[in-house]
Length: 306
Ligand code: FPP
Ligand code: MG
Image (cartoon, rainbow, N blue to C red; front, side):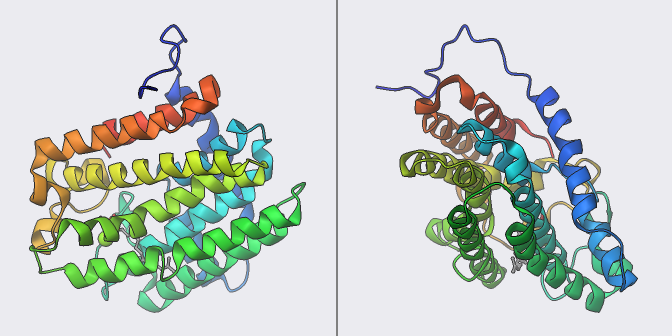
């Protein structure tokens, strides 16, 4: 049987920090160029305030890495990588609004609506969401149109009622109900978190011309890192500090939300996250050593402290 760590143990250790340090500035520069300041200034200032506020840039980096994994030039995936970050950012702008989580801090600074007001924050989110799709359609170069269409359709599915929006509404409805079942909790996070990670990983590979088999392996990987990511998020909401996370903590308990630690306890939650990461890495076995960046990112997801 293929084990979770079946890669040659003699392979030199992959330097994820160096990899991320190389990729992050490329993503930052592409985002900066994709959404330049223009009229109406208030709108674009607000969009850029949140889009260029740092962050792990995990979704774009996963997209570029999966493109490279199947032999593509990561440049062809950069517009999609930027679109993923635009969608992620807009979902956080809207999530932080008073009508939803009513949060004051994000990525170590005031939330968008605290600076620009609810009206502008809603519109900045709307503009980022719609521009994301336009950007993939107009800026992707050197890729057959049918692949670009597949990516656009996949993005739409991942963010709409069958994706982020669906997960968010069930999440909001479960507030104040600490008896939420594991099934509902899994639904929330498979949609609110894992769906965007899944299209991040699969879109890069689709643009590079991956086979259906390769896309399926990457989907298996992404679904598992997505759930593990959320379990770790729940753990950090209890064990970390507001300074480290750049946002308020203890919110799940305050909102009487069911979380993985509240259902399983902290130790079992960590065990489940580790198990998912092992399974995620096993899903990459057929790619061989070229999958090292994605494996290292999977490890980083459980080891991260923010
Ligand atoms: C953070 O969750 C929020 C999300 C991951 C996504 C929320 C989705 C929406 C607001 C829907 C947006 C609309 C579209 C069209 C995509 P959290 O509140 O658990 O985490 P936090 O502590 O970082 O706020
Ligand atoms: Mg929130």
